[in-house]
Length: 178
Image (cartoon, rainbow, N blue to C red; front, side):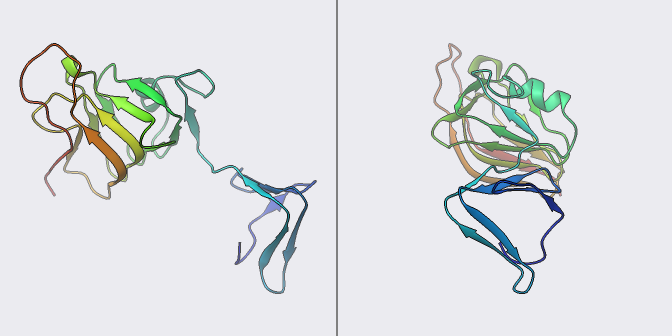
């Protein structure tokens, strides 16, 4: 780490930044005010900061993505642990909400095939590192209409289906407007 040091506190090889994030090392952490660098001697362990953790196994703040995003405020960052999360309604993100999965292969949002649910994003939303499967709607699994500053990266769209309805299965992003 280089640059000006944020307000910090901590002891025993751990630094807690004013954002609430922690960064630790197994041995020595020292800040050098001359070269504005954090010097680390030993093994690094750090927790990336997320406001809310969603885990299907109950080890997070929520087990359901729909519930978490509807209850939590705009500009909340959600970390989604590996697991399959079946949508119970359209997933409508508030402005600035971010969904970050643990992995593309094992963090799966299932659009619930027969119900045709989709993810609708708002301004400044971000979708990162998960798979979206079982979407059965003519528009797309992620719906963007007249929104701006949307980031979608490391997402696998797969329209395979296990449902009973016949018809066109589409996956991907539907975008319209400005």
